[in-house]
Length: 373
Figure: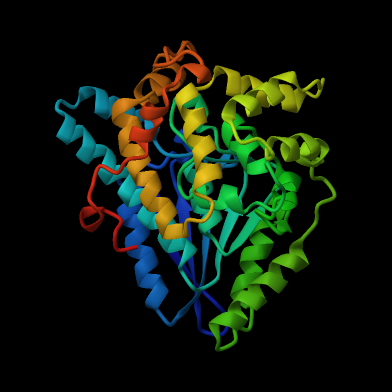
């Protein structure tokens, strides 16, 4: 069986190396299974200290997706077949700890790390994407954090990056609705500075290997930026959607209660198909997930990156064991009946103390699996 992640080293003309990471599960849209995280982490740690390696390039096989997210279907099915609360807790903790360690390492890799954002970039895929120092999107890029549809919550560092978007209320809206955005939307939000046609992939790789790499890592970042900027060409990229609705997002950011946010969204009169599709996802999604996201962007905006991952691990364990994840994945990905039986039918039905408990860590601080981040 072929490996789920491929690694290669491309020799540069001046004697250096560009590390190549290729996600290799095209039929599953590169869903991140538990076996992939140790492979990624081990290779990244090797390349991080290898003086020959001047840059790392993260991509995937096929044309449909960079990465559609974590393999939550396998996670759900394993949870269903596992007996005992402690065994389930360990299972969930192991999966998300390994995933978040990789994401955190990407954010702190140091050397230029380029990600090729082609096709679907969702959930855990966006976690990988946001960890890169140089983020490319092609004309086919479709970016979203759609966790509300499966009863999870925006994780993989979303508590950090949704709170750092340059326009008010957008992070709240994207997290609540799981709205899909395109390459120009990504540029609007600063998620990517490089809009490069998919057809230029080989040209970009060639340019990396023929570059005269300087002796300083800071200069390497500048060199990669100049290289990618020179490949920028957005003529055939679709117009973004977000900018057309910024007044709504800004209004949402002024409210201090989720109920008021919901009222505003539902009362908003628009015939825009993109907006209506996004709002529908919110109304059909998990009410518990909506409450979690609302707290993420209102109470945890000041957390540093490590703190965000630690919080999200607490939430992941609690949500998988006590909330809507198992049922949400069943309805959307296993039985595919699209009829989730959420624990609470309406957002107004969710008790405050229930949400409080989801934000309570299952570990003491000195025993937290991510305490060393």
